[in-house]
Amino acid sequence: MTEEEIMAIAKQAGFERLGHTDDDWVCYPKDIKAFAELVAQAERKEWEIEFAGMGEWACVYLLQERNK
Image (cartoon, rainbow, N blue to C red; front, side, top):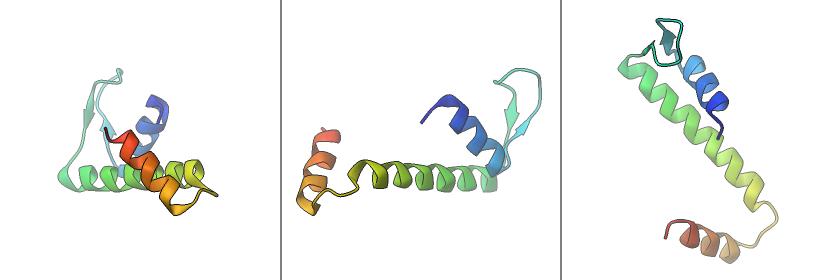
């Protein structure tokens, strides 16, 4: 996921920009939860694309290799 995608998700989740730099943001617990859910959705979509058309055991193997 690119930095631009992460920033877009943060804005969508409700994070608010305080200053003129990318480091000045404020958020609340509900915003953090929404951000985490949106990131998880984006990751699932990426995995769906990556594993499309593969058999179940091939996906299990790739996930195990990725987590080493």
